[in-house]
Image 1 (cartoon, rainbow, N blue to C red):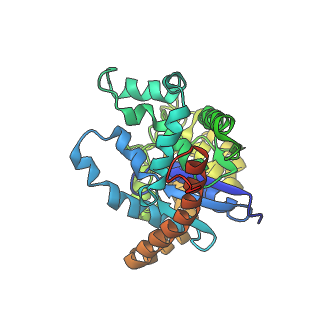
Image 2 (image 1 turned 30 degrees about the horizontal axis):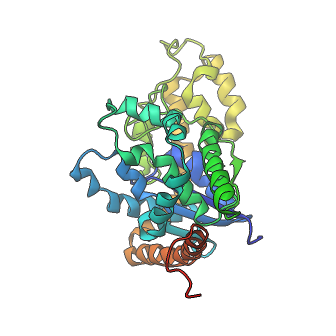
Amino acid sequence: MEDNKVIFSGMRPTGRLHLGNYLGALQNWVGLQDEYSCIYAAVDVHALTTITSGDEVHEIRPNIREMLIDWLAAGLDPQRSILFVQSHVPEVLTLSALLSMVTPLGWLMRVPTFKDRVRQMSETEDSVSYGLVGYPVLQTADIILYKATAVPVGEDQVPHLELAREIVRRFNNTFGDTFPEPQVKLTEVPSIVGLDGQHKMSKSLDNHIELASDPEETSKRVLTAFTDPQRMRRTDPGRPSVCNVYSLHKVFDPANLDAIYEECTTATRGCVDCKRQLADGINDYLAEMRERRRELEERPDYVTEVLLDGAKRAKVIAKATIDEVTEKMGLGIPPLN
């Protein structure tokens, strides 16, 4: 791979990952290791922007560990990628503060996700934290601290990266060419609807299936999944096009998709049969990953070593960037002559 092809991406540490996290991002991260120099962070400082009590803070560290185990079990390789915790490289906070000097407040107030978060949290203007408003600046610092050239995103995240590119252009125009403009690397993200059949798979909605769940728990949860709301009886023909269970079959049992479609639309199979087959498909798909996870759980020191080594490698890049930035911004000790 070329050294100048650098990927950066991060995840908020929410603990064990679910199928939506894997199919929406993690699976793609694993594949990118073959083509790019990859840097992946557990963005714990970002997690603080929506924390409302001190009790939640105590969940961050164990959540990081659980998430990293899922990363490693899924195939992220610490020999090919840098895996670390955002706060372990505090240079990102320095760069975020410096970038804030060239970022207009109006840019931040127009970010759609900022407005959505304020609405979801029922916040007033007086109670919105500076950290929440400045989230995109810290996000930009995450990316450009490592001179990343591309960021894997879905279509819905493209506006976020465009703001990062605008901040980079403003900085480069003001202080001289310093950062590459990170490019969008669009990824095809399957729409993973949760077990409720309505909303995106999410822990907060409890409509998810964890990667680490055992086969019995997975089967139990799949059996609760909503299907075609108009199919009231076993003898009613189904409509696969509106059934979330069928959409998941596309991922976990593609070889039998035609037969599933035919049997559903002709009412020769019931929804319970379909769910049981889906549960078997998910369990088969995740079997090797779950075995690797069990092995990693028995090696807690290894997980710690991966994070410490990742932070050490990331700090080398980060320090060089900060040295360059502070020089161009006229900061630090002036030369003697």
